[in-house]
Length: 325
Ligand SMILES: [Ca+2]
Ligand SMILES: [Ca+2]
Ligand SMILES: [Ca+2]
Ligand SMILES: [Ca+2]
Image 1 (tube, rainbow, N blue to C red):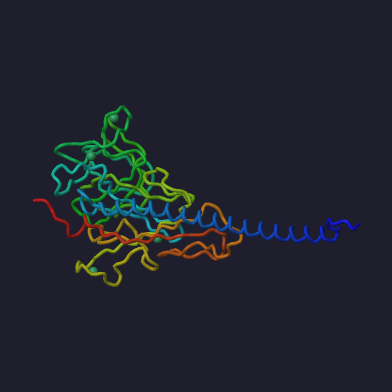
Image 2 (image 1 turned 90 degrees about the vertical axis):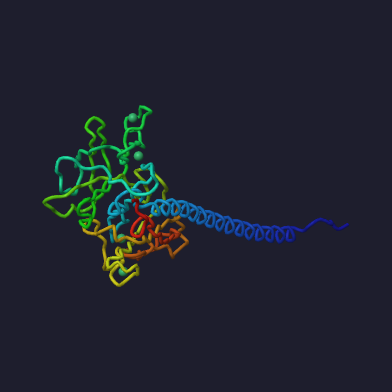
């Protein structure tokens, strides 16, 4: 009687078919999984970007709130690195009478110019911005009692109150001295244009800085994988409320230097935040550094996927704002 089981040939064919099916199934699984990881990491990047952008938009909308308009914003334009951005710190200010503005903290001792670099110590008339009802917002010595509107690792913008057209300088506060009401600053912009006289004031600010693909706000780590921040300023220099030729700064051929720009002319800010996926994908050959404003695109693919968020924010506290009486 003939054996009714499988012949060795039949078994070999069957296992060969099985193997082929297995290989295909595995392949589909791997591709699916790769696609999933890819989409997941792009979605992740996108969500992070949106969160950063909404915070930045909110900060920009408040630029110049309750402070002299010239101190609304200050920036350092780079063409081969991320831009640096300083926005007056509205969280430090308690709007006691809701309308009008405070003059900032006056620099004491007849100081008329501030030079670029670290270690500039300025004595102020007060560490708080609100003159009538001082309301310190930060606790410098961590004793549970707020003592200053300036904080270590926070930004600062300095302008000349009697000649605001001189522009501004900005930097990071490295020390707040409660005993002498003074602050020490690392000035990041070019020096203030020289002047024989002047009334310098300091205003607390929020610094946006990118360091090794990490975005910091007042030295606080906001997000990793952020490659670039490029900022463009619309200064209505001829005062006609229209954007005319030459009134956009921070674009190619119009590099922005804070030191000689008048922030009172500011009407809008456009920013671009470039974020990339956490890890590179060696199969992705279109991963180039993204060109925005006056920065060039990369020339070799590094396998990262990138997303750019661009937004234009009208600076409603500068220009045609309602002044107090
Ligand atoms: Ca730039
Ligand atoms: Ca305050
Ligand atoms: Ca304190
Ligand atoms: Ca104009």
